[in-house]
Length: 64
Image 1 (cartoon, helix red, strand yellow):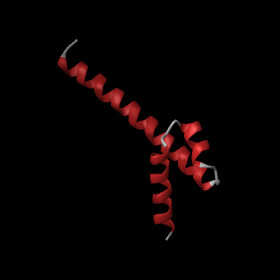
Image 2 (cartoon, rainbow, N blue to C red):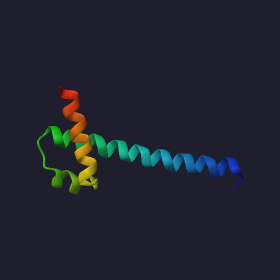
Image 3 (cartoon, one colour):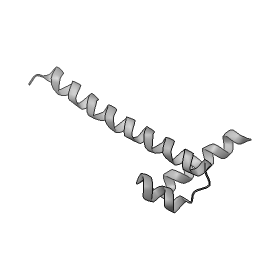
Image 4 (tube, rainbow, N blue to C red):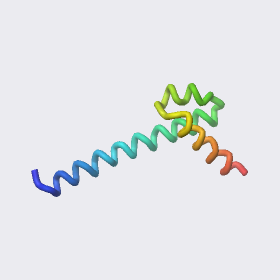
């Protein structure tokens, strides 16, 4: 396998990870908007409380 193919695989793998993280963030945002607790959201998404709190702060900033 050549260098190009190896780099392409790396980029594809990173793209999948980024996509998964984006989906998790969108799910967490929707759950926050629905009034769910941080603990519940963490359990469902696998995100840390800190990550969820950051999303919550972003939501508050966008409201006002």
